[in-house]
Amino acid sequence: MTKMKKEEPYIKTCPNGCESVLYDSHLILPEGILKCCPVCSQLISQCSQELYINSNQEWDSAEGTWPSKKDLKRLVKRREQTMKTVSKLLSKRYSEIRLLDVGCSNGAFIWIAKQLGIKAEGVEPAVKAAKAATELGLKVHLGFLENIKLPENAFDVITLFEVIEHISNPMVLLAECYRILCPGGILVIGTGNTNSWTRRILKSRWDFFDIHQHGGHINFYNPNSMAVLANNTGFSVQKTKTSAVKLAEKGDFPYLIYRILKIGSELLNVPTKILGKGHQMEVFLISNKLK
Ligand SMILES: [Zn+2]
View 1: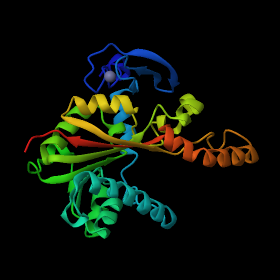
View 2: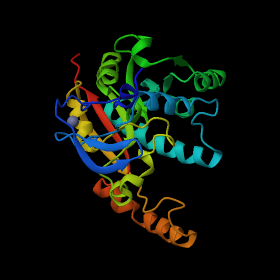
View 3: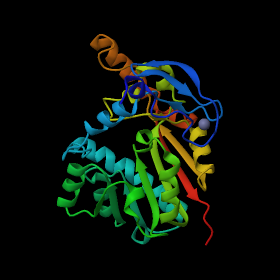
View 4: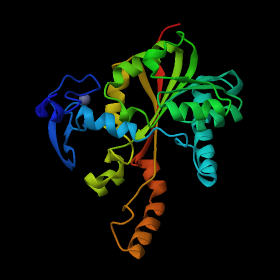
């Protein structure tokens, strides 16, 4: 492979199907200027395919994304909220819901869902993480969703937590979710929100942009670009929730100032949620498939 080829950006057009010419945003990352779609405002990394593949490989471990004891409590609370919303949107009790968690890592959310009485299984391409989940007695399919070929209409809900920002062609992934979801099924997508106060304050220092820290973040969504992707793949947005604000990254300021900014961030949590400006975004899409 020639040097020119290696430097070529991995994603060259809007991944949400806008067919637009991307322009340079004012945000500069180590791998180049973030590109922006003039139609949906999606921000797109200019990283090469080689950098993308390498940064993803940094992240396969048996520990995966299983949280610490304290963080597990917080995660249980957060995911219970998510599933309450899903249950309401589906008009189904937990025991009637068939769930697939795509990119399940070592299975923390499958475990939580099963505790709630939901029939849950997962998909994970990272070998060590998938093996760790299987050893816990959880049902996990090893590989990428598009290659596994699960049966049509097999699930009521599919969850994609912190997955879509890693994907170069989300339309292919959503098409497969559409196929295996039942009519009226729900797709939950959790990712960062580039329209957030945090992103606006931290600009290119927003840690979500860091390709190494998160193992291959290349696509950055906002509520509008998510709606465009949904509409182009047979879904409609039912609900968008955002949360959390961060005024500073640790290490950017002396400790005392960092602490003050952290308290300020916590005070802003409630207005952030109400105004939809949080940096964590959870979008509930409903499949438009007919019965
Ligand atoms: Zn676009």
